[in-house]
Length: 417
Image 1: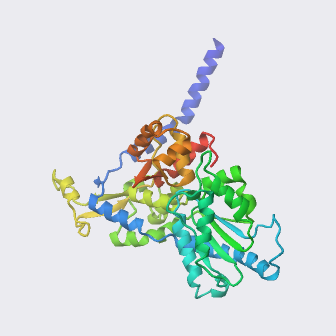
Image 2: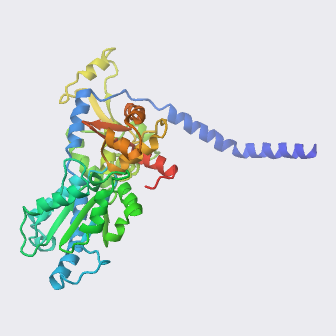
Image 3: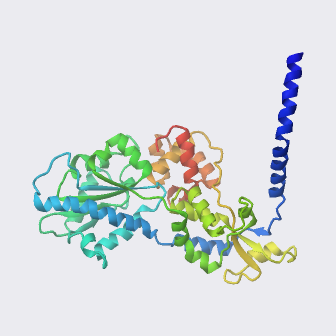
């Protein structure tokens, strides 16, 4: 009985000690929840479509192209110097003729590489000598459909015949290696052809782009990392870099960044709210531009300055002309990644395949899973309805906004990403 009395006394003392902090916590919570809510409305459909088009046509982030220019100078010059000094001095483990560029699996790496390759082809007026590819033919390899080993070699040969070089040397670029293989029994023929025959040709300098998930997969399956001494990983973008990149859209629509939902997270009133917003956006997007664009779009809402417009306010908003926002302002609320919906069956494997290949038709997706089309259609429909995957024409892709969430989910389920 004495032990019970002692326990109660200790509990009473603990509660008295914690009373002040508990009251303070409750008061803070009540204060945050009772903040006056602004009259937030979804963006008018016409304005949302216009914004989507503007964001879709943003050029790839220039800092990524600058990063590739810097790394190209080092990778190319090492190979080119050896080719000039001792072209016959080639060893199987040298591998200075392959430069691999790795990006997040939802990044638009072909566009980034396109800007970089244009700079090589045109020459850099400010640093032409350092960036120059010494006049070598620049061969960009693309396929309309996923090739096999034989068609790869044939396509390369046909394209090579269009170029001329005094000594046979050339630069060969594969901007999206994911288009060249399929995770299936016979789907790695192209990778075998590359690693066993093509990459060992010292007269070619290879530039190969692929996503992070494909990179990890091909490291494990084909030891792709053993064929290259130089690998570049696209750097994560900071809040400042994202802000500068999206700023033309922000300026045109006078978007503001001091909504109550953002202010409620911080006690200081002297913050640079736009800087704070983009710092959070960069964290939520994991520094990936395509993810940041989707998150940015989802934070935008219209605020009505006039709270007495009547019951037809929603109709007026929907009919609002995109270039006439009288009485309305566009605010950006706190960036936040969407939660993961409940998955059907073994949908994790479907999502992994989309990360691995970037884009797949339904049949390719079924082949990559070793299943029939009928088996995976319910999973596809469920994920499309939830907005996790998107379909454009005949191809399926992961919605970039879900990329960090899906990666966290798959890593928790022991997928190698």
